[in-house]
Length: 247
Length: 124
Image (cartoon, rainbow over all chains, first blue to last red; front, side, top):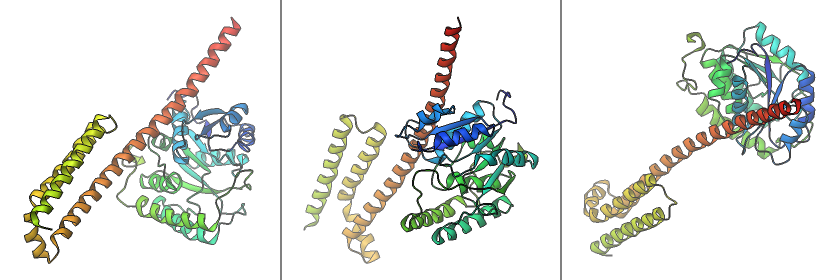
């Protein structure tokens, strides 16, 4: 780590076919005062070019890896470039970059390694479908137990990650469904990292299609249950170190 | 079908499978590691044919048809093999992922170095 970006944050934006929204998201992040790296996850619609034109650093994955794969690439790049804080933010415009300074300050002030922006605790009008609410509550309960902190939105992708957890995520980060959100949260808690959540405002999707149909919700339920079965095992430890206190 | 005919068919099938594996390997589309594995399976099929009479006492102890016992053992072996292959594929997926990430990071680094180089030349 070269130290020149110590305590400075970089925003990591995983993007897959988000050409409609990525430029506006990058512009908003730069306006909020943060450097941004867009991880183009094998898009075929010119997302990388749009992000580059908007002055973002762009990591172009040669093929689609999924959100977890894109995020680990972004975290690796952040660590390689000396950043100690990375903020994960969606490219579809749902996450409000105006929240970034408050989230980063909150994480630093409270010595948090992982801060999750929750859609359920206040300022947002976000409501999930009934079929989705059941597994979401279940995931939240397991995540709360693992982290020792009240988690209401275990699958939120609006997060601040600080060193040394950032270094762990740069080396090992789950790439399967809900692995990048729920499992990463549970593992951070299991390893003794300080985890909390903060209410954030959420925008409507600025482009692309959401996956909120009944079939998609049922699939979400099935996959969430499998993730719970595998990712919440008490003996499973993702990182090599025993806990943050040993570091 | 007589006992001898069953043995002959099983042994011939095993040998045919072994020949097919060798032919595929010689075309270079099956690596040595998996060739050895599948040849082992072929050897097991031949052995099952030749040692078929050993199945009979086990089958009668379990009150099952000998063919059913053989089929069950074969299915279970293939199931184990499939799980092993899934584990291998998972490992390869992780390697491909790491490689893709390294590729993306190096590409950005190269682009930036090229930009720096170009602006240096413009200033000279």
